[in-house]
Image 1 (cartoon, rainbow, N blue to C red):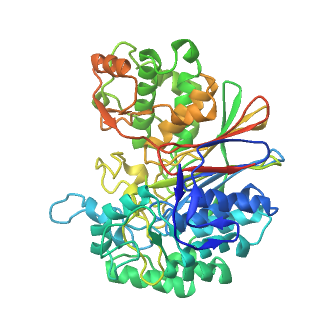
Image 2 (tube, rainbow, N blue to C red):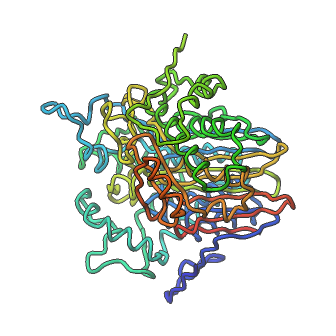
Image 3 (cartoon, rainbow, N blue to C red):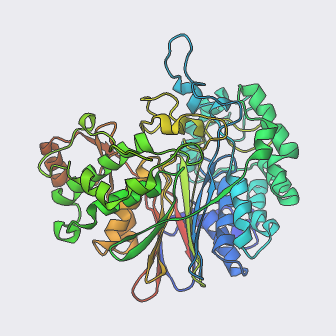
Length: 557
């Protein structure tokens, strides 16, 4: 996919108006895969300038905040999973958190007793405290280049502008009414005179100013000073509750990596408050003793098993998972062999399960998103997923600061039994509390083989993140696929409730019919996820694959 536009404006080493989306590439030294060609190029340029995988991730994320506004962000949050060349692993949690004035029933109407999801999904009150800038500064300790160098390409892209793709134009047009509704000042994302079209230039002067403050004043350039004042002023205008003290108090957290073995491969993923790593471990453990290769790729036998495994895992998610700093999450029990065996006993291989009868296991204890995968020449592997939640988050842009705020408060259980934006149900474990981090489905993952990086993988798209990563890993390890096939073969998804199986439209028709005959409710979707994968093959070549479902791209050598 090539985007060739006529406007002048070439930066040194980066052409804002003529760039190509490279879907797969064999690399020998290093690779960067993410949601936009310009951001992938920016990340890779940092490696060429002497940086490592961490430099690439930081620079690419700053760039994504400019060129991929519906998910790339500084007003959201995310998770980083890393494997160092020396064999160590680490995680960084920079998930958004609830403001100090937040409380359990803040979105429940006092008269009707019903939750108002409009308030948790759109506007200033839907926003949690942003974590992305803190996460990137926390990551800087492992990088080689200074932050001023890593953030400058993003500043230039925002200041000089870039040509938008047809996909971005379509999304901007779709969000136009919401941008006008939820902002006191019409943002640059609104084209008042006409619809956006492919090749139009998007210039973001206010965002460039914010990025410069971060460049010049570091982390305080976002969480304090002028940017913080602008954000709090936006809160007051829009009925939000984030305060200056909330911003100043926010910290990214280093957590111990969630690590387990699947068919001889070491899988490293994210622990709570992400549900991704725990569910991924559960699902892989449930299929590990099954002859998946013998069942065959996307046969009735293999797909039915994986659907039921997904159902069981998501049922557990609804009851048992939340922020471990506020709720005792029973990770050890949820991922124990005895528990997994007991859960598997409930699967009937001859018919569809019923979610109303499938509950979380009993334990007694004493969306819109974007992903970056990077692997460098020395063996550092970094997998990062960040999010605003919905496309363009809360649709609220901080006036005169130019960045979009998340709507992550909706990822809490705003009322027990009430589904969030992605249909996920939650309970007490994920209820709202001041300072608490909302449960996430983000699943940045690294797979090792012989203690060396074998796969770096992740994807956006709400609750389908976990099932897409699960299927991608099975595609490679059990079915022997290359990176391109593992990423782009049709995906399917089940999340317990609603009780339906989502299938991509190009999913095999005969298997779809067989699933319907088993009693499954099938819902067709145009696409599921946008997976980014780097796979080291038996010859030591880095197979870098960017999902064909979007503008995603590879950069590497």
